[in-house]
Image 1 (cartoon, rainbow, N blue to C red):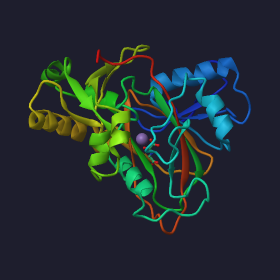
Image 2: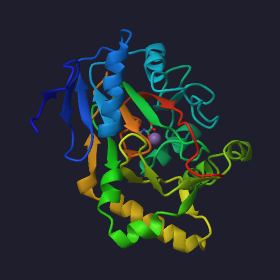
Image 3: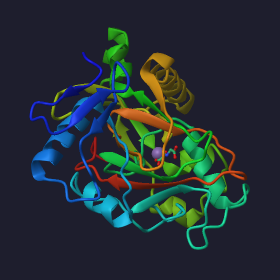
Image 4: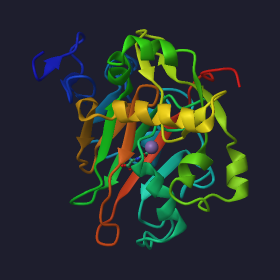
Amino acid sequence: MPACYKSVTMTLTVRKLHPLFGAEIGGVDLTRPVAAGTFEEIRSAFEEHSVLLLRGQAIDDSQQIAFSQLFGPLETTVSANPAGGTAFARQSNLDINTGDMIPVDDRRMVYQRANFFWHTDSSFKRVPALCSLLSARICPPEGGDTEFATLRGAYATLPETMKQKIEPLIAEHSLAYSRGLVDPNVLTEAQKAEVPPVKQRLVRTNPVNGRKALYVSAHASHIVGWPFAEGRALLDELTAHATEPEFCFAHRWRNGDLIIWDNRAVLHRATPYDTVKYKRLMQRTTVAGDAPTVAQ
Ligand code: OGA
Ligand code: MN
């Protein structure tokens, strides 16, 4: 495939980011209303490539919401997030009201540390998220990259016996579990009660192209109906496989980048930056999925 080619209707350009997944999309300006035909192309590129990068998009919050809503209704962030109760998840070391840098031991910074684990957004919700859109407003000059891993690539390379073993399995996911990996006290009892544990299928099938993905995440604690330790060992083994270097790439952010990722088909994780020295502000909108992956 050439490094850069025009899509069929010649509206967007598509440049692959990794042999297995990810594409940079050019030829769209999100500060203006996006034509229906253009959105159709973006949506089908999303189904195909799982991670889309759009550069030079100096959007504000309302433009981000308007574009995100083209994918479907948005989720409201859980109350524990620094932007809880809004359409945004705020990944930042800047106070939402004052803009001052937040001290490293502040609860808001501890909460964000769970993003260092490979995860997929909102798998702790009964109806897990379709996609997330992360807009880079202020980037640190070094560090703070985001890494992605393809869960389709991971699934496709599993031995046939493992594919058969995991096909019927269901994992329990919860925010209390993943946040507890950082600090068991980071969520209050009320915040835990807001999002009780849910069940998710371990293998998901894309409804458009039928491609299967291994649906693991830091939110997954164990396998339903299995002894905890045995399920934990399987989830650890599958996550280690899914995040082998051949399935991953890192994104070095520039201000104005927007990345859309498919939470059904990729894992992602944050990487550290110097939160005392540098500012970082990333705004995430999250598009809700349309159904549970399994009866609850
Ligand atoms: C997120 C997330 C990673 C980052 O926004 O969901 O995990 O690098 N972000 O900020
Ligand atoms: Mn995330």
